[in-house]
Amino acid sequence: MKPQVVFVLGGPGAGKGTQCAKIVENYGYTHLSAGDLLREERNRKGSEAGQLIDHYIKEGKIVPVEITIGLLSTAMDKTMKEDENKIRFLIDGFPRNEDNLQGWTKVMDDKADVKFVLFFNCSNEVCINRCLERGKSSGRTDDNKESLEKRIQTYLQSTRPIIDLYEKQGKVRMINASRSVDEVFADVKLIFDKEC
Image (cartoon, rainbow, N blue to C red; front, side):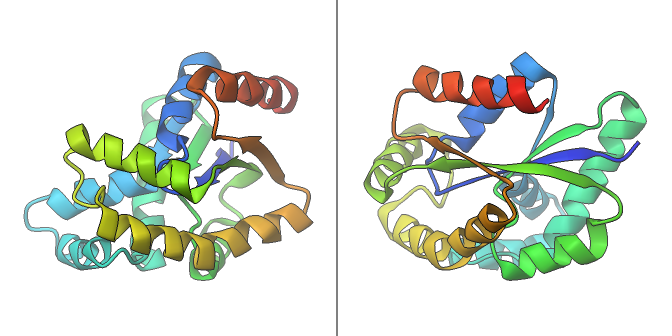
């Protein structure tokens, strides 16, 4: 069985991680966060890729696609080896740009089925405020005003066009993510009850 993938996209602080946790709890998906996988690799002692990842993250830039896809593919394989029934994945924060999308298409197109893109649409102001609030306790080095400005710009220039591309294919399910966690999840449930 091929992995069934839902890409989860939205600006920094749009609530992707929070909503993914609820989807995992209610629908049995496996949540893979591209950012978390990169941060883990970055902190792994002796990782050659880790130093490179560190540089990109500090600059608010997007890590080269080969690294990210390698980490995602390995994580999916590991999950399916441990439990062959676990074939449904939420991939959070990927693809972030044209290069990511082309890399995915080249490497993963015949290995996984992308069902749809779950897009958490949220104003930049709400995203920034949520991240600054999260930064007080998250320990993330990129939850500060300077990094956030760069991350929002990267998102607008690089990720929004990917969402628009999937939109043209009829694969985007958009949710207004500026509301409360429960209001947002009520809309998520409507989508997953219908699609899955």
